Amino acid sequence: MVRFKHRYLLCELVSDDPRCRLSLDDRVLSSLVRDTIARVHGTFGAAACSIGFAVRYLNAYTGIVLLRCRKEFYQLAWSALPFITYLENKGHRYPCFFNTLHVGVKTFHKLLTTITHMPGTIRTCQKFLIQYNRRQLLILLQNCTDEGEREAIQKSVTRSCLLEEEEESSEEAAEAME
Picture 1 (cartoon, helix red, strand yellow):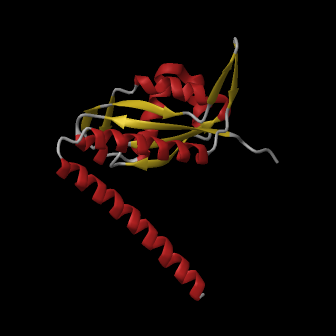
Picture 2 (picture 1 turned 60 degrees about the vertical axis):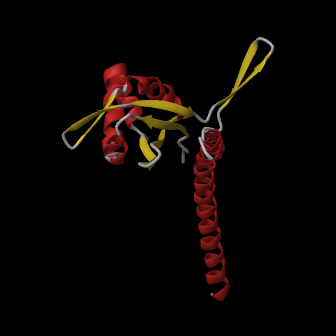
């Protein structure tokens, strides 16, 4: 039996129109990326990337998208993302672009040689996304104009953390009762 290796592309869909993010659907996004790969790389690119390609995670509120593709052809999908300039859904066309946040590839420079390590797991993308969200939150807090905004953001963050802790403790209590 052969194990097929995949690479994950963590991207952010950036658009000025808030309706663009709310109209996101994984099927629409998947067909958009596949069509763009076919337009940029032709039939070879379309055939190579169609096997194993999937939208693994999609958050319509933040615009974060996690794309999965085969290890051998992830660079074809990655190179086609800058050519996406609009999202078309339900008869509406929204201008947008993809910002690639993380590719699951770490590059280390040692003298004149470059050694590339490709972990290619969802876990590395999750770790990166946590760090990215923390940095974005710090930037948001630094850009607050008054103390009221800062307190509102801190309250919402602590509320979400408390809700997560309550959910975990209730799950642990339910497991203990069983």
